[in-house]
Every structure is written in structure tokens, then in C-alpha cells.
Image 1: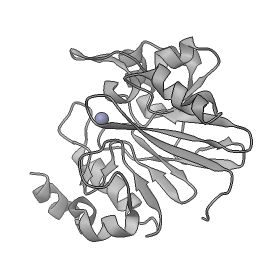
Image 2 (image 1 turned 180 degrees about the vertical axis):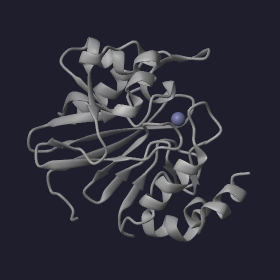
Image 3 (image 1 turned 60 degrees about the vertical axis):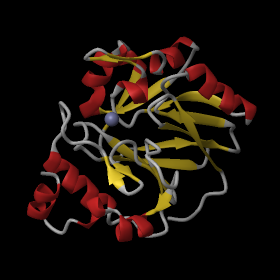
Image 4 (image 1 turned 30 degrees about the horizontal axis):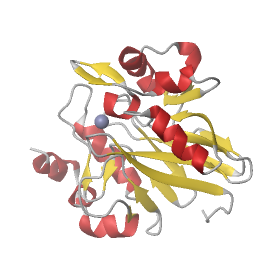
Length: 227
Ligand SMILES: [Zn+2]
């Protein structure tokens, strides 16, 4: 893949849990999608509008409240996808394995969602967003490959990976998902779902050298690493 002149991509830090939200859109059509609107949807939309971008929906990496708003198990996040829907026409793009969880956490309805299969492509202007199903952190976790950029949610962090000890987590699936991401070309830039110290982004080449979670060479080694 090559760089795309139409691509608009912006990283925004939000909330008390060091979340990263992203705007992915088209410079030509001035439309964008918010990756994981949470904590303060109005402020995220305002950032888009400052850049003369019109928000038309959201891409959901996974259903945890710090990424989509709502509540789960006594953990409540004040704002998220439901606020985006309340503002008017918007579609919420989610992996089909994550749809039930998303509804439970955010109380949105089936009609608000576009449920996706692995490998689906969402187009906005001349920008193509490929949805990579990367289960492990949650059953329907997905990453977004946007030309030379990987928006990775809680699957891959800069020198880390998402937790696999939560309800719905599956450590062996995370191994497979990381193996898949490890095949991406070195120049692809990684944009994680949280800023857990260090650089806010990296390249896959650098991560293959420095991220121990990408370096496990067998499932047995991975299981030992993850305890
Ligand atoms: Zn999460």
C-alpha cells in the first residue's frame, strides 16, 4: 500500500485513562469517522469542526466503556457513541462479534450499527479503511488499516498489548492476532488505543524489534510469557 493524498488522520488524547481517539477522513469530501468516541464526544466533534471536517459516524475498535462510553460492571464513562447518534445521522461500524457487547454497554440499537465481517472495507472519499478482526482483548476487537497506518485499539500498544485477563478475553486468540499484525510491513505506522508512556505512535518495524509481545515465536512461548 502507498500513502494516500486524500487521507486526513488525527490523533486526540481524551479522558483520565490515557485513551487515544482518532479522526479518519477525506480531505476532499471533508467527511470523517471518529475511532472510539468516548469521555467527551462534543469536544472530539469540535476538534473535527476546527479542521472543517464533518463527522459522519464512528469506527469501534471494541466495546469497553473507555472506548465507546456507557457502563459495564460499575465502570461508567459519561459520553460516547450514543451522544454521537443523538447529534444526528451517524453510523457506528462494529465487528459482528462485538455487536451484542456494544449494545449492552452503550444501549444503542441494531439500527444504529453496521455490523462487519473480517476484511470489510469502509470507504470515505478516496480513503479505504480495511477492518482487521483481531480477537483476544475482546471477541470482536478490530484494528483499522488505513493505507500506511494501523489504528490498533487495545490490541497493540507501543511496546505492549491489550489485557487478556478480562471477561471475554482469550489469550490464545491474542497470540494469533499479534502474529497477523506482525506480518504488516515495517513502514506501517502504529497508532494505539492508549498512551501508556513513551512515544504516542511507532512503526511496525520498530515494534517488531522492541515489543516483546510481537516476538513470541510459538504459542507455548506466548503462554509462558503471559503467565
Ligand atoms: Zn479495552
